[in-house]
Length: 200
Image 1 (cartoon, rainbow, N blue to C red):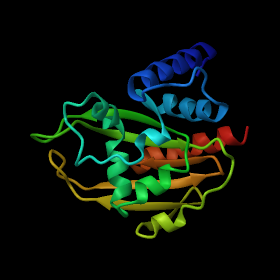
Image 2 (spheres, helix red, strand yellow):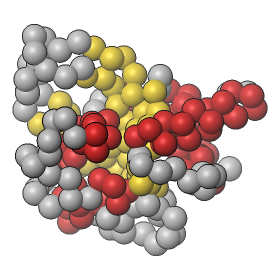
Image 3 (cartoon, rainbow, N blue to C red):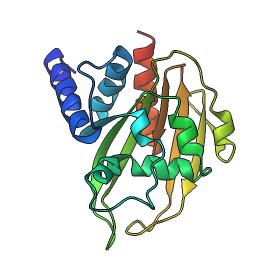
């Protein structure tokens, strides 16, 4: 990515953040910028929100016509995936992170009724520098090794418009990042890129 592309990427991220996350910081932190850079290399669309915005989301009580509800839409698959591991897992995990970024690509129409699906990668970023051990929240997931790193995997069943189950891949990266994808290829690529930027 050239310097000009990087500047455009950050401008676009701030613009999306203003649309999707209520408010966006005037300047991304270095850690958030690293995560955004990784996502802009791999995905067509990148969205930002503050971690606290996603806490206590109850999809059962939201109004479909409510403008605030629409702001949650890019993150509903993340919430649904984490809640499949336990009713409090999403809040327990996201409470440890200041920001959540989403990269999405390969948008596909549903089979009949339902929402558009896509390949997604979520990166949560903490600015506190402390390591939160999330192992307890992922007791219901399976352990796999990818790139020599412990990765949690689990699946959710098919839902309206999507006749196949969705498999998630998640891992903590250093003391800063938590990453979840809904496919192994993006997990591998984003893990490699994020690990590389951490070591610079």
